[in-house]
Image (cartoon, rainbow, N blue to C red; front, side):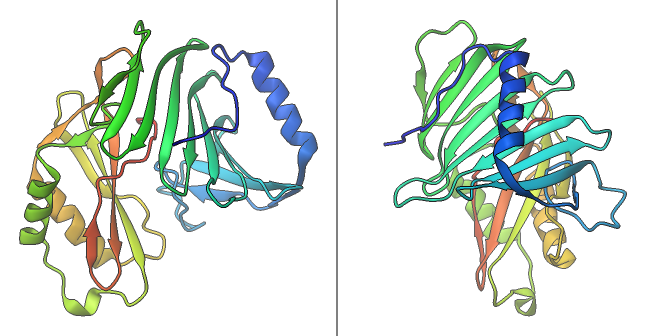
Length: 270
């Protein structure tokens, strides 16, 4: 069972958001003085990487060790706020708020990091227009604009999806990946490959999202396999049921080998 420890306003106003910002101003005890550069996928990059520098992040902590990450555009507009509470035995809550260019809340995601169950609420013009509750990797309850009762389904279609079954994808990957044994790291490593899927299910771009400290040769092979997969993707649907262009983030985890995952982060499209 997934339990949420906060309440969600149906209609977040600028006044509510201002109060929240004021609350955090007074309750935070420590803050990093140095801004951390991020790329468009919200991953950290090298400070000298001006080409991929899109956002800046500041990190703060409250008295109870709650972590607050505030992410700004390079011209100083708030883009995202991530609040991560200290873990308990059964729950580790993380709340992510995403804002648009008008400082309005676009979506709010509450996740239990211990089991990846989550609830995401979507907003438009300060009104809730959709939601998705994840009970497992194959059980979702979805409601879009105008729907009063959530519909049970096996996929999260707010995100782009790899076409075919997981078995098809795994077999294709195993048959096409070509990595020298000496490239396999003894230490755990994680590579996130971003695939930009347009509203027609066509792949517009494939790139390495978290290239800080990783191995370019490994990332290039992962990109090659995804490019060989072709346009076998389904586009994301917005809260109104319309197909939209959006990034799909696919993690590849290395622990003496590579394991594939279809877990997708709930991120905004670019």
